[in-house]
View 1 (cartoon, rainbow over the protein chains, first blue to last red):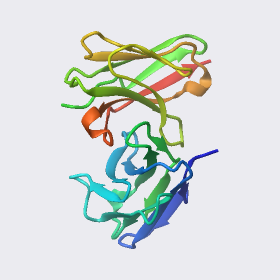
View 2 (cartoon, chains in turn cyan, red):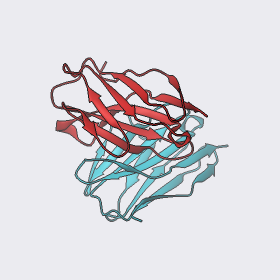
View 3 (cartoon, helix red, strand yellow):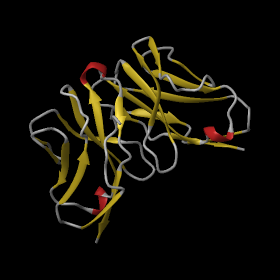
Length: 111
Length: 111
């Protein structure tokens, strides 16, 4: 089945130690999104790629960056994670901004 | 506020219909209304969306008020597998990449 895959499902890192989360898709969708979801809250959009064009949300911290080397893969880099960055990170894809398809997320813990 | 308003939680009996309300009094004429749901430990999944007319699909029905200031997601016969957080979301037609998420309604299904 075509899908959105996030690895790993659980990631533990140390305070201030850079971490990278990955997302891959077999749907061949041109738009990819990264969301942050904290406990009992709705997902919050961090940024998205429309093809190769990167679009950052105004309130996304500078600590968060993203790379999309090709259509299938997208990475979320957190340069210096703080305790407040502990959350579920969700990747989603869509074709031309229509219905979004989500992965099951990576839960990030900060020690 | 541009966000939608939903009850924090609702309970329903198994095999009975469920009506999940959503208020979006400031919605613009070009905003779609989307519903996604999120099962425990999973990413959100698309349920249904509409603009003005009522919509039906295999998962649910969406009833949109004539003035578009409110809508109701209808699950015709809830099962235990429908227990999830249901998000009512605005999607701007002129910015299809951005979904404005409500806080969600946690649906509890009683056997």
